[in-house]
Length: 437
Ligand code: B12
Image (cartoon, rainbow, N blue to C red; front, side, top):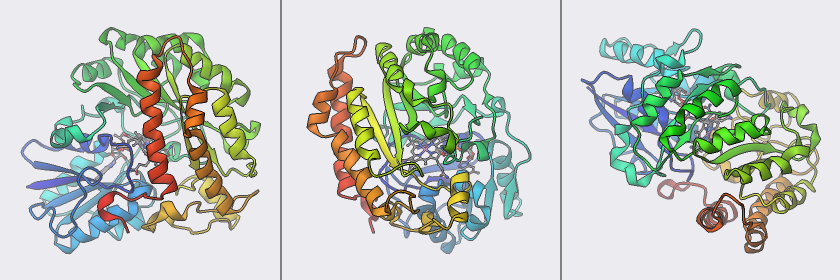
């Protein structure tokens, strides 16, 4: 039996190995022939690929739903059975079911072995739904061998997950409705054992918040210290405004953290993110840099309290605080979020299923902001990228941080982001080269 594991691509994005599929591979019995395709690395040919597969399994996020359904439909036309799973089918199983023979609602650890068993016995069900949540200690070590043929095409980071779930209730985020509202942690010994087997330059921790459960994080990163790792991850500001936490992260090899600053507006409570205190942003950024950790700051535009002055204020702040890297996003109503439900109830969605469109990036924003026109939001968002990665801003943000050699980290990353902004954002080349529409 041959199974093809597929990661669908929506747009050119960071080339990171998809951990979900390595997890599926690890959950598959060794006598099954497992193939792997990443649409972003080698775009899938809808006509000729997967002729030999008996079953294809596709991992779907909302952004990749359109493409995933296109791949699924093409496979089914050829008589290949299709299973869809991941965050998007978990939220919208009925929608996914129109393109699949089976839909997995939830985490693979319990459900994937059942799907395989049923497929082999020729009794595949339409839906597989998990009761409760997976104990993270029952998640196998991902089988990263599936990435070996593409290994040079990926960013040289091994992706590792230590926790799932999140106790915060940010309006726009999918995580706690899908993975639960408390942290589920893996045993530290398990993480240590997994990390010891890794071979790439560094690690990306695919946790929503590497310092979310402070006692756990302190123990984990202290245990990882002897391995002299280099790693990056995501963190919430709540755990970073603390000198001791920063010391532990630094000593364990943390090089950069992607942080949801979201907004400079003090009304963050109204979007469910009271843990952010804009008055402390500057101080936290400085402390991170003092510990040799790059603050990769993520801002969002389009909240109900954002008027057209938000773009300039945010970029001015980012430059004045010498933020090393920043990402700007238009607020996006993801299905299953409170944001989506509210905008729908208020009649403010411009298109209710934007993820079913091939050109969703170009059409964004997908809702009517309260204090500006949709077009102003789009133009302001583009302006922020242009301004923040202009040569003059790059120059103004250069700083001789005590702990980071400025030229190693700063210039290459900023030039790379500038290139990305010019091609993807101003020139609107959002589709992967091969299947641009
Ligand atoms: C790491 C990460 C990334 C990385 C790497 C993605 C990659 N290549 O894997 C990068 C930085 C590239 C990224 C980019 C983006 N991301 Co992201 N990302 C994450 C993060 C933090 C972890 C994902 C992960 O690796 N989890 C570990 C694996 C093991 O879990 P998993 O993928 O969920 O898989 C499990 C189950 O879902 C299921 N499963 C998954 N697939 C399948 C398939 C089958 C067949 C089966 C049976 C089961 C199954 O089983 C797995 C094991 O239990 C999540 C947050 C989260 N907690 O999920 C956000 C998240 C997935 N990202 C999100 C978003 C919005 C984005 C971006 C759009 C952001 C942006 N504006 O650019 C881009 C889009 C990228 C693209 N493809 O076009 C949203 C998605 C929301 C949604 N409804 O789709 C999330 C949930 C964050 C959030 N706060 O809401 N992301």
